[in-house]
Image 1 (spheres, rainbow, N blue to C red):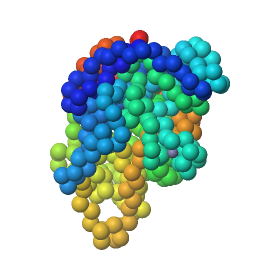
Image 2 (image 1 turned 60 degrees about the vertical axis):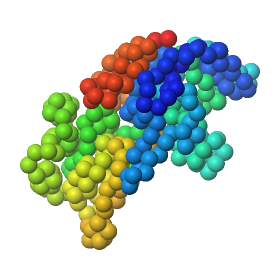
Image 3 (image 1 turned 30 degrees about the horizontal axis):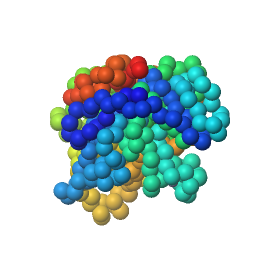
Image 4 (image 1 turned 120 degrees about the vertical axis):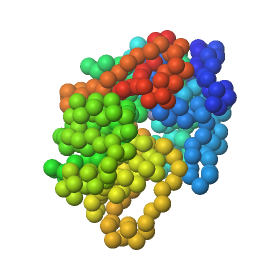
Length: 351
Ligand SMILES: [Zn+2]
Ligand SMILES: [Zn+2]
């Protein structure tokens, strides 16, 4: 088998040949047919996150051992099963739930495996989908997606799941009030489609890129704001008539969080998804006089994935634009994403 792996942080991925994986016990091996390219893959290649205050989190401190292949939006075909594996058959085409934990802690046993303190996730801790094959511990990590294009289905494992879980954390969305979306890139657009699928169609978008703003309007956003022009907070508050209770930040830096928090009304909630990094000065008295919540959120549960697939199968979830590239172009794909040249999602395909 082959993997496109990080050998050294900040350097291009290298194609490395390995012996084919041999499943033991309940393990199942899949040939990767599709793997979405996510912004976290860029962080994974660089190997570090900016925690603010000059602090850096290195992925190697999270238990990553190099070389290691990124890629966590995986769709594959079952090609080998361990002697005790059940619930799948050779040839099954499945979405892989990649957010694996220890399997025994309070999170893992209550379907919050993505919160496990001992994550074993594919493509962020262990070898992921930038390769010819992946192995999963058992068939409970595999999800059927009948009727959905496999390239699109791969994006459900991170982008679809992440936006769904983030929107759920905002609680009941007040009818007739807008949801503010910071960043109209891949996740921002996925969130728009998810909000529409859930029956909420008032969306305000903020993005520095004129083309992304125009695309967001074409996709159904009511307003799109340029954060660098005029007084965007005043404009957003006015457009929302002072009733903005929900915001999603897919950028996650001081400017975007600050703007979203300033726009929110009393009791408003901000779900923080993007890992732009850094820090944000918070007025503590301001949090009392104008009570609001910031909610950190990462990926989602297996039940969330089930519900995302069901929404897509019901026809309510509009597919986001997908472009495919061969796996051998993984480095080019990461570069395009980093340069902000991807609208929707890039998916690596083929053996
Ligand atoms: Zn991701
Ligand atoms: Zn666990």
